Length: 255
Image 1 (tube, one colour):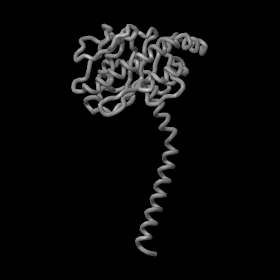
Image 2 (tube, one colour):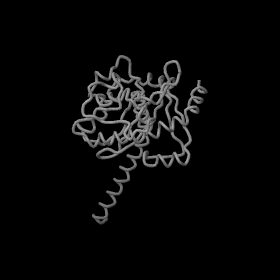
Image 3 (cartoon, helix red, strand yellow):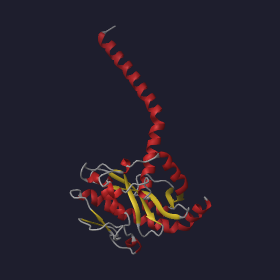
Image 4 (tube, one colour):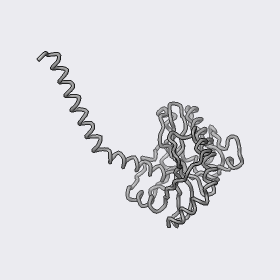
């Protein structure tokens, strides 16, 4: 056989074997990948809902991220079953059109997580939001209180920002300033309901304001986060207000 032709056949055979091996590995690891993705999603919801592992105070972990906490999967599963209700609500034409510039994927429904307290009473509403940072998409999960007047918390689930600068939005030290953030500006139709400041003397848990402390050297990332919040929260607050009775009925019916 021609040596050149043999080499071609050999390379084709090796490529087929290699591709087949990769396909098998992909199928074998698919369930584990899905499970890990669901665990990370649940961690973000728990963090945003301010439900942390026992004994953990995020203020003591300023440089850590949500994934650094000692999460127990069995405990997480119990919390999910007892304190979270995933509710799918239909979108009308106007609502879908309003969401076109806010979400990467859009269907006929919108998912809201109803967060319950330990007695099963409605405590807040959670949902994902999307925006643009310096280098790409920024995604986050947000939980608002029942009255839609304050933020319980936020966790950034996707970002491509500069390590050590914009990527610090995932650190607890930055996210801590969102807890207790005053959202009353949305109901008052302010142009900029949330603002970013260079220095904030007290957290919003101590004194609730409409301000978040920015990250030094990450102006464009912070502006992206600010735009994402002011744009998305305006829609979600109005949407939840319009469906509030429906959500409460579903939550009560689930007991």
